Every structure is written in structure tokens, then in C-alpha cells.
Length: 258
Image (cartoon, rainbow, N blue to C red; front, side, top):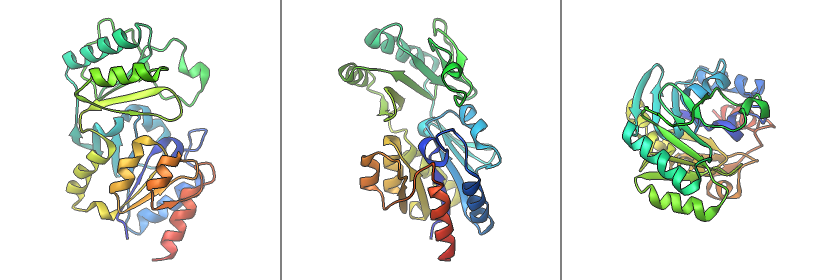
């Protein structure tokens, strides 16, 4: 039986309109009451994701694709690029993908974006972003994302950023770059050390490429019904979709077995 329930956000714990369903919240409250730890593991920045969590108040918050880990109110892991490394990455991305390519940068405190169209004009479910043209960017970064429409261009950027781990998001043309060896699954070891638990005691939920490693190393890897096929293939179980409160149904069944 698991001790930590670990959830991806988009496409998993969040519905399509970026909310946690009431059924899921009720199930999570019950799980916490009987001793489960609740964790969130997302590619979103910390500040970007907080507005979606509401009353959840997770015990563990893994953000920026594993580059930042928070236990309650204490950071227990940070993996940042220096100011110089961050600038170099931005410049290389512009040189390879075009100087007008869209880039996001996560820092400890903010989510930066050189968007051409304000994302709130497209969807109110976007988290807060600070606009910048990166012309005089002086921040340490946790993560860089680049929108790339050409696969060969994406591969060229991956080859150029040899000190980075890269994963593509399935619902668009965005590629995530974190420090080499910094992924959701790698960050879990700091969580396990902090709580003195093993990966076998984790039940992890996900839907996209960046969740695969996390689901594979956990005691039980749970794929959402809306997950991509690659996630379903490596998971121990496939449940209902994020819009069907599949998580609540699974957790209620889990508690009934206790």
C-alpha cells in the first residue's frame, strides 16, 4: 500500500478547464485523513501552478519538471542554470529556432515569456506570466521551454544544448529543457529521502511524456484515460480521464480495499 500519492497537473489532476473536481478533492481529503501524503509533480513553475491548487495544500510540490522540490514550506532541492548559462541557452535557441521564437523561462519567483499574443486572450486558464524580450535578461533559470514547429530544428537545439535534459509536450510544439539529469523521476529521490520512504510506496498519476519516468519508478504507475499511448503502455493501470474524475474513482476503490 502506498504512502505518497503523486499527481501531474495538466491532463491529470486538473480537468480540461484547469480545475480540480469536487469529487477528486473529497477523495484526496479522505486519503489524507487516513495517512496518505499528497504530492504534485508538474512541469509548470511553482508560482504558475499555485493558482490552480486551491485548498489542496500538497505536502510535496515538484515544479519546473523536477528542478524545484518543496516540502511543505521548505525547498529541499533546486537545480538552476546560472545567469550566464541561461543567457547562452536563450541565445542558442534564438540562433537555431529564429529570433522570434517563443521562449518561456522559469525562475524561483516568476514565469517569463516573450509571447506574441497575450496568452490570456487565448485562454483564461493560463497561469501568470511576465513578458520580456530577453534582451537584458539577468536571472538564474530552473527551466526553459521553446516552441519549435520543425522536428529537425528541435533535434538541432537538443544537440546544441548538451548539458540539458529535453522532453516534448504532446499537446503542442513545446520542448522543455532542464539541467542534465533533472526530471520528475530524478526529483523523487529527494522526496523519498526527506520522508524516509521508498519509491515502492508511491502511487503516481500522469498522462504525458514527462510523466513516463515518474510512473515507471513508482510502486504503482497510474495512467489517465486521456493519456498518450506511450504512457498507457508503461503503466500498471489505466483509469478514467481527467474530465471523468477518474482519480476519485480509483482512490475510493483503493480506500475500500483497506
